[in-house]
Image (tube, rainbow, N blue to C red):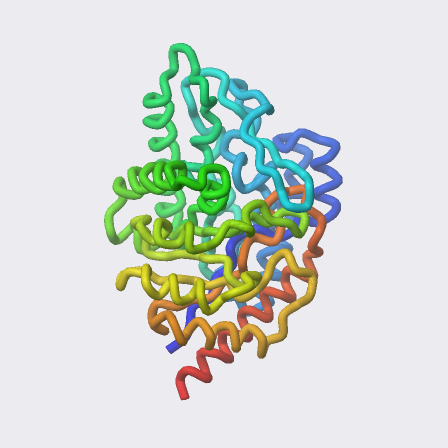
Length: 352
Ligand SMILES: [Zn+2]
């Protein structure tokens, strides 16, 4: 028995890429060697950690994990949905100004470049339909009703997942950071339920076989070593989260104060056909976890979750926003190495 372990996605970009992106448009052809070098180096360093599954570190996702498919669309304004972080800064999403809604790029283009360099399976994260649904303004768009927008959004999201599956992604992970945030914005639960329903509408378009390769990531956000919804009790989110019709869940846990209580909640709501990858690495904490610490977190989780439904992950990506320099690449890879080795130690201990 080996406990599976996977990253979430992002790795801090090399400083030279961040500098170049500050001076040039993200699609400027002169950036190609910077992107290519960043992806090649990221994959090589990922593989050196012993990680059985790698990502491209989201080196080409601009400006972030949320807006990459729509960045640069001419029918948007930058004054959309705001995410306030506990550290005091705000990240802002584009607002749709008129229809039709189309993606500008699909994540399989990143995946294919990563596979070019990788010797092990590559997973690909995509943004959820619910996150992008926040681009549609509350007061509507004349001539482009919300129902039409949702149809277009679901189709684009489905296309992106299908393209990644067809390209051979080990896993397609739907980033759902707005799940916990939804309970902060609307404690009644209506917004969260509407997100779950919307994402399940998209997932219903896939076969059960496909859905085994599809997962959902939840976290309280991770930007500049800060969060947007860590103050929302997980009990408010998890029962709804496990209603999503996917085979895999990637749940931030390492940085939670009361892990046993959360694990007990996961135990109650995880279905027999689902695997939960629990966070054993606190992505926003600078200190590098020891291998033994990771092992103990896995063993703790194994007291609640059946071992054949348990995996490990990082709490979040290490730089979901492309200009986030709060964590170095060295630190990110050292933490990933601790996760890989600590999870292997736990597997050994559980086999005895
Ligand atoms: Zn996250």
